[in-house]
Image 1 (cartoon, rainbow, N blue to C red):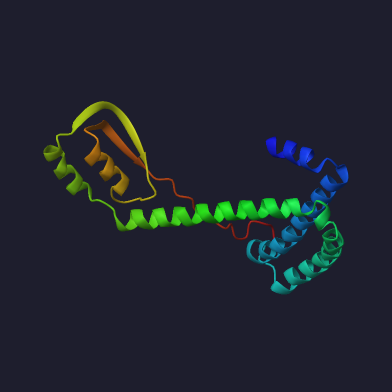
Image 2: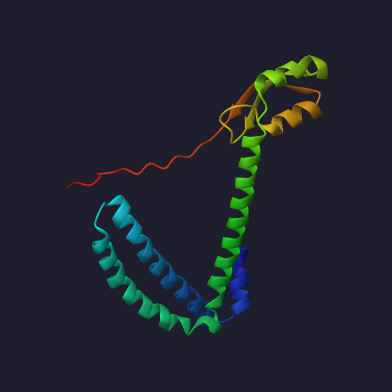
Amino acid sequence: MFLCLAVIVGFRDTDMIGNAYGLSVITVMLVTTCLMFLIITTVWNQSVFSAFLFTIIFASLELLYFTACLLKFPHGGWLPFLLSIITLTTMSIWHYGTAKKLNFELHNKVSLDSLLSLGPTLGLARVPGVALVLTNSVAGVPPMFAHFVTNFPAFHRVLIFVSVQTYVVWIQGWRKR
């Protein structure tokens, strides 16, 4: 809502808002047509030639509209590209940090036996309750939990390590032949 209000107040002209909207819509259409090439070849199992033919026919028409809309870039069309660059930068930084965290967790796992052997020497107290520990690791104790145990005097009686993994499965032959 605040971004929409900022655009309206910042542009103060419906023509500039229309230019930004038009350029963003035609860019989405062009990107969607290019991504359809992947859908046609990988999901629908069609030949590369038919996918290429589809892409050429539709992309050539959309490129005509896109080049016409590029003339509107200095008159408000720059806003969608600026927002796209900001979003891309944010997502790239997030992905880089997530990959580094996962790599750290994989290389610094703590074995459960060594963690349990530290229990009596650290003087840990077990409190009633259930604790959920979110981790990317599916085996071993995450290093974050080992750090928690060594710095806090108590943890819950029941510990559940939760790991959520996402798997993408391509369904082959889902359409009627």
